[in-house]
Length: 415
Image (tube, rainbow, N blue to C red):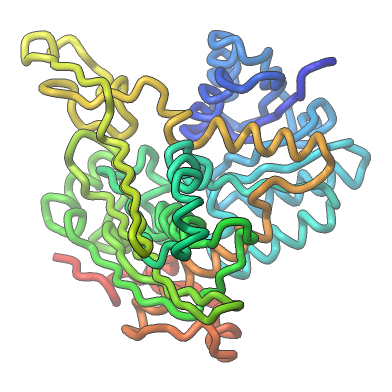
């Protein structure tokens, strides 16, 4: 039996990360790539790692006609154009078994709806890649607590954070192209995993109903004069004119539709975490039991002194978003597996082979986009937003945050 053939659209950071993840996935080849830039480099990486020939294609349509499923890993502001090209290719005869899209599904609810509609028009199974739900640590915690949950009741409080010192590429910092700041970039992760761990065992992923959200968005490190100067020099982005938030926190309240019991998911995200590197921290509390996960608590540590560090150019050899290459370093030997990338690929391929959506599909991605945008709306209005209110639901359909409009100075403190 031949291997399942994946094709990637886009050749940036996330494409490279998923290419590395494929080293731990059996029966799958990275068969092709299409990208206006970086495609030869991704091809070289795939061949170096032995995960596929990764033929460079000249168009989205050509790629779609030579693979079993395509992965849309392009910047947020390109997603609709790319999905239209994929849908056109399928309608023209490309026999795709599935389409994968990296978070977020859309920059706004309206964009997410367009992408969802295009997927339904194409008529192929979908996968929404939200890696933290697939983390082995999260799955193991829930499996370990299953007896306690069944006897004592489900978790009632979940707290999740993702923090690092800031994104790799300029478009991530641009609130218009990206769709906001850290809440748009990483809040989707924390909101999704919080919703997931609160869900009672055996219930669907969207079983709990979101009923309210409160949030704050702030500009702390990158709104200072020194931060603005550094960002302008490094990324060419001017936060004195059109800033995005570098810190966001909030609470979403959920209700169990069968029992009426409420539970809460707290999320915290920042682009100002100047420690070892990216930290994912999650915990959950139930009646008489709890769990805690911290990705910076690695079993491996390395020490590099000043003299030896002078020869090191890439701080990220130890950890994603690492800001140091000397001292006592937290080292994660397999980040792609730790963060859930391996398992989400395995799930998508297994489901596509069976002819249906992945565990997380575009419909689920739409709901996460809606919750992220509701958090922006709550922060702008300075209220606890009632998600059951018909007017709020209607407003979210056409809502674009002031930050995503490039009007962040109206709601953020800029020095």
